[in-house]
Amino acid sequence: MSTVGDQPAEEWAEQQAEHETDPQAQYQVEPLAENLIERLAQRAFSGADLAALLTLEEPAAVAQLHRAAYDLTTHEVGDAVYYRGLIELSNRCIRDCYYCGIRRGNHAVERYTLDQEAVVEAAVWAAHAGYGSCVLQAGERQDEPFTAFIEACVRDIKQQTRSAQLPQGLGITLSLGEQSAETYQRWREAGAHRYLLRIETSSPTLFARLHPPEQRFERRLKALEDLAACGFQVGTGVMIGLPGQTIADLVADIRFFASHAIDMIGMGPYLTASGNAMPDSDAATMAPERLLTLTLNMIATTRLVLRDVNIAATTALQTLVPDGRERGIACGANIVMPNITPTVARSHYQLYVGKPCLDEGREACRGCLERRIRAVGRRVGRDAWGDSKHYARRL
Ligand code: SF4
Image 1 (spheres, helix red, strand yellow):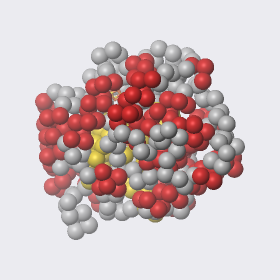
Image 2: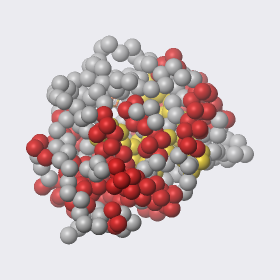
Image 3: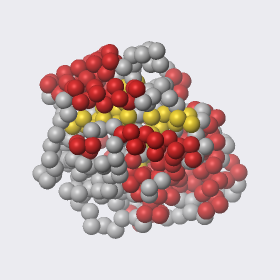
Image 4: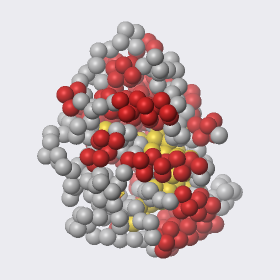
């Protein structure tokens, strides 16, 4: 029997081809295998083990799972939580992902693009605040002016944020969708060294339900491979609680992370967006408490399997409950992405309904977040990139 954590990509592809979504099996609670809670420190888990961990609901067992993931995080990647100051530089997008509030077909959205000066000013603020890294995020565009704009922003940020504390300037993560290998290479050479490209689900069937036909699962996989080939630290992630998604799909997602060159993971609950085009948007969504537990179990289980990756406590978790990010940190996350986009633009970048901190200035956010992180026994990793240890080990 192959176990998750020791599986090559080819084997994952074979299993994925056999895996079929069974709507009847959606989020059934799996029986807890004997001694599973006592075996949380092991290095390899069967698919049945993972399904049982994901569906834990009994409070004492859930607490044990989350504690084991928290302790493993301390052991594998340390006790620091690293900041990535998030700059949402544009909500223009050529794609039409059905679940997304800023998809190109949502004409109710007021479109904006920050200029280079505003992007760099936000990044310089982050460097002075000790954040260590920033994320440049936007809807997807593949035109040359946009490619050159990002290149210029990255170079400018690097130049303006070098200091005694950060001799190589801010660490820069990009989150700008699917691009050609040539574009990825240009941005890498400009100085960005991490890239987030969420696969959203490792199930090709579910992926096809979330996207129009021209957005193909194989293209997303190829883009992830191109990013790794360019030398980026590669981040991906999935949504949890999607209509039609099963526990078997989530187990397959963890298998996907483990069998591909994935160094960073960001996962959040599926939240509906204003102006979405989901075919089954009227379908009953999971109760918030259940969705929260499932999402936290997914973070904890992913930590137990992947061990040394960086895992983000996402803003979507905070949308579900005000202390969602702390709860994510308490079960295995070690990255947060405080929003440092100028507040005037933030309300126009809503991927889902209920995005928090829309009008909270970055100074207020900074103090609030640090208190929250200390409350879960972690410290803030100041003036440091906080790179993925998994990346260093896979080279
Ligand atoms: S998820 Fe990203 S690529 Fe898809 S529509 Fe939204 S912004 Fe565009």
